[in-house]
Length: 453
Image (tube, rainbow, N blue to C red; front, side, top):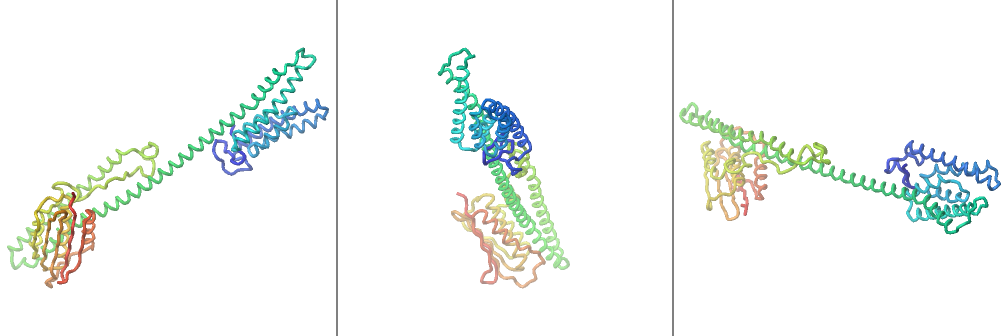
């Protein structure tokens, strides 16, 4: 049997109800109350007729009054206090037994303050005790009983009857009320945890999207650095080869051989990058499988179960340690490649050469590589200088070139992402980057990267 208070109706399942017909939200609640009211009305009608015969009132009037009193139980969910008061009022007429029991239970299980419940239960118990006392005393004093009236015995028996008819429904109602509040508290806590899990899943998805965006940017930057420089040099050599093919066959042969070497180097670096990219899905799948499933231990549950955010894997030569990426010792070869393509370029080193870490060295190498590529693209015939400086707490590089000599540059496409990529690389290490034209009509690129420790 599920009951509610005067202000918070119940849905029959122990939780707050939805708006329904009057104060019933389910048909079974209405059917239960109607059945209880019918039983109480029949009982009260019989007891009312009996009381009317003892007092000389018309039996039909007593039965009708009892019928109306018992039917009050239909209002127990809406007005439990009124139902209990009616039960207390008719207790001297010795009617409303079921009405009092169900009314006390409903009152104790409702949201009515406990002090009101205690006061009404005490009043009901006192009324029941008084009626029982009078009945017992009258029975013991009856001439046909053959027993003498014992006032203490009558008092004790009356108290036990009052306690037996009052305490059980009140205690049961209080238990149901406490259990219902506990269930509601657990439901609210579960809803709160579910909301927190949803927020965590949304944040995980946001982090995953950011990680994917960062990786796309990193892949694009690596592809640009690895392919653009080699292809740019190949285009320059192809143009030179076309110019000298008929005039100087030996020089054309050397240029063709150099062109082939550059193409093979570009393919080798491209294969290395693609190999790294192929290993990423397997590593990511293993990382996801190693993480505990969200959503109460159910694998794959929750919006964030498909992706586990973590440290983003590094792609390209810059990501590795040891020999996986270019180093500063290879700058001389890089400068020689540009010189072989017809650029007047020189390399100068200041300070004592020392290891700076594979990632920092790869970043400096890529900055010089992109700067020389830009000279090939935009300043054909210009002279360039590369200055590498080892300082106490940082490593710096400066690439400058003079104005173009007026010769037509090779038709090299430009996506406009070279300077952006250099700035991103340097900023990732907490360094500073600057690029812009010089007063002599050339261009300069400078970068400074602090050394760890």
